[in-house]
Length: 335
Image (cartoon, rainbow, N blue to C red; front, side, top):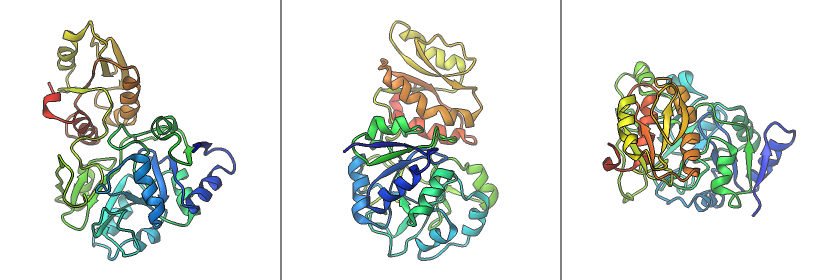
């Protein structure tokens, strides 16, 4: 299969992508978070293709993307009381809601569970693709399972070229980490940190719990994507330091003669053989936007290992921290 790269700025590109979706094919497309791999969420055959292309296990459910409140409501058997407030505050945007599912949603989308994860992306290309397709679009991140998520079209092609029909190139994704997943069927409970912060949700909802990662395949489907203990990972071993300049230098210095790659905050003077300018420490929005691009670039250089400082649990730093902990996979990778 030849994967088409369609520039979203050119006339007819989105229309061509719409035809592929309606015909049961797969199109990777930009959102404000990361690129998603989209197929008709109501077409079981199309959804199976997503799992095959990504080599994704069936117990890991998909997020369904919509382009309107009406489309969101059509996927749920009932709407919990907090939906109105959340929709007004954060939608369209980087928030996914786990809701009781309507029977029209195929079980393969939800990993056999009676809940469905739904979001309304805040990206003009994504909104237009979904609206013109006329169907909700199931779309996990457009990469191989557990690999670093894509924030540019070239990242998608690096993982999925020849496996999908097309990628819509809409430029880099502005947020750069996935949506927050909020379970409204029990809680409310955050199942995955993301573009809407825990602090923002608690200001609106009051008490909000947090879900736990799983370290092995579950007996039944997961309630949300992004819950496995290893995820977002480069092929190169990732090592984490505490989030101070001297702590990072202490990790890197003994390996000065090895080709070690570093996600290096701007202005930090760590002597690194190979570094990616990550952005100013504390500017979590910039660091989130550059996180996956930095991990992918360093991975391509084939260093001995990659080192990254770990942000604190505050604001968008919490989502970056979660991604890095999952990418490093085990406690023994933190020094």
